[in-house]
Amino acid sequence: MNEAFERLLQRAEQLIDRIESVLPKPLSAPDWGASVAFRYRKRSNGHGVLEPVRHLSLQSLSDLKEIDGQKEKIERNTQQFVDGKPANNVLLTGARGTGKSSLIKACLNAYSSQGLRLIEVDKADLTDLPDIVEVVSSRPEKFIVFCDDLSFEDGEASYKALKSILDGSVAASTPNVLIYATSNRRHLLPEYMKENLGYTHTDDGEIHPGEVVEEKISLSERFGLWVSFYPFSQEEYLVIVAQWLRSLGVPEEAMAAARPQALVWALERGSRSGRVASQFARDFAGQNAHG
Image 1: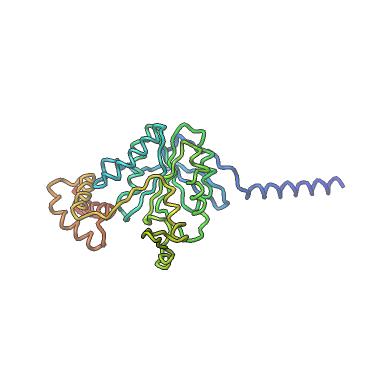
Image 2 (image 1 turned 60 degrees about the vertical axis):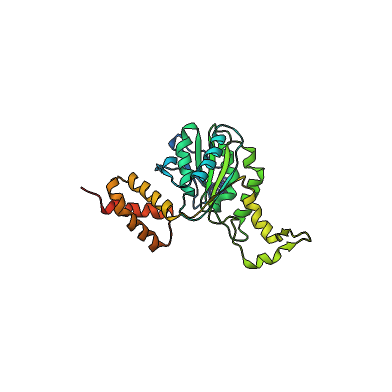
């Protein structure tokens, strides 16, 4: 009888161990000294971890050209944040490759010595943000939760999670956490022509959006600071190309030859973005490198 009971007890303990191994565990703190930037990742077992980013972008704010207005707004808000003053969650929107993500990373480089830290979170994992906030809430550093290329399809759970977070139920109660997000969509959700049929007109000529449009606008309105980015003109694009060429060691006397080639490169790609400028500069520098 005792042997049967011992076997039953052993099997029960094994079963408990197996159950505990698959149950979500509380998010544990990483080695905060390992980096100034971290990524939140979900393992295959569903457990979340904060992984230090070992190789950081070395881009500085002075490297970013032709976005001075946007840079000033982000710098000011970030400086307020690290100084412990009121600051806003930020939504950076606009054309691809115009420096939205680069500006946030350059801010991290500029302010990390003042205690700024960055945690990159994929939109699918935004539902876990309360766990992340819980881990960092007692830390002395200031944390930017960075959501890159943020957009949603109708009905996504992470859309509602972010909306509730921006309403202040989590992040606003923690003064050392802000959300910085980039998106190509101003309202973060796809917009359809049929939704315009929901607009109504008042007798005095005012136009009011319908409920569907209101819902899509409401998320982006919860970001306190909007920063818009626009496609670059030809001259702005060439200024950015020159900046990248200099950073890659291309001598000034080679700049004139690079200009027409840079324009052809942009024409072939149908875009005059900072990303296209960087790609051209790398190609040109690689072809003209000596030694």
